[in-house]
Amino acid sequence: MDVYVVGAGMTKFGKHPDRDAVDLAVEAVNEAIRDAGVDRRRIQAAYCGHVYGGMVLGQKVLARTGLAGIPLANVENACSSGATAIREGYLAIRAGEYDVVLAFGVEHLTTRFRGALTPGEEDLEGALGLTMPAVYAMRAVRHMTEFGTTREELAYVSVKNKRNASLNPYAQFQNPVTVEDVLNSRPIADPLRLLDCCPVSDGAAAVVLASERVVGELGRSRAVRLAAASLRTGTVEVGLPSMAFEPLTRATAQDAYERAGVGPEDVDFAEVHDCFSIAEVLRVEGLGLYPVGEYPKRAARGEADIGGRLPINPSGGLLGKGHPLGATGVAQVVELVRQLRGEAGPRQIEGARVGLAHCRGGKAAGVEGAACTVLIATR
Image (cartoon, rainbow, N blue to C red):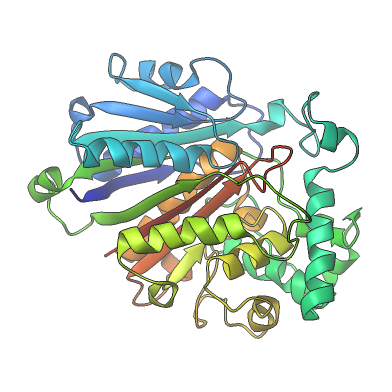
């Protein structure tokens, strides 16, 4: 049974000191329901993705949106929490359990962290210095060593994404930057600078999913088919892991391509989990969208720009749009929907028919990565 996204909504990402997570989620959910044009009484179940939202956050949102009483599951899967919530709704509709499902993600990180996300007390590797900035700094050095990637090419990833974000009214950052701005920003973990790193963000995003039968009733003009929703966890690492390639991203992508009946050559644009500038490089190459080792040079030539051969992160990505953990994967799908409907305004990709969203998050000692999702949407 095919599954469609019939409604999409999100808040502006950024710092919201005067609002809480529930308030942000209510805004996104109400916008998605309005966008879907369905009576909210038709929504049969809901899934809420969040990481630091506390106990029964999703139920608090349902209580304020007229949806209390329906089944709801709170989903925590690190940065992939929101995308995993969508996948749960997708699977429930495909199984014939429901016809209309709400999936949303939310995070209010500024009430939890004032700077970088800190490792958990039980994270021995993190306590010894293997924090996320340190991990990705090593990956950047390795990519430079193996493929000759330059510091300027890596900086261009952030330049591109912040330029795209300036065209997105929902993005946290609204001002473009230059390569020089990136290189001259504050050092974080050599060679990464402040503008190579995504920010701490607050925000929420939501989608309404529906079965083919319901889409037939609503009309297909604005429905976007969710052709695949794949999820993988990292395998146990034996020996020295690769720092310049992501097998987990490749395996998840291969599963999604097979389920959607497309290949990387069919993808018109992608929203990719760019928590750091080097992360976009590794994920794009892992997805097979650009040859391994070549993405930084090709991106610096403009191939990944809006209007380029294969645009990456037209929304601004995490570097430009922001990264409220639980909301990120849902916001990526919101961008897919708006692009495929032709509703993306000045960042619109002409003729887009196939969009891909990749989200990867978390780490656990001894495995490559905690969770990776690849969702593919088509028109």
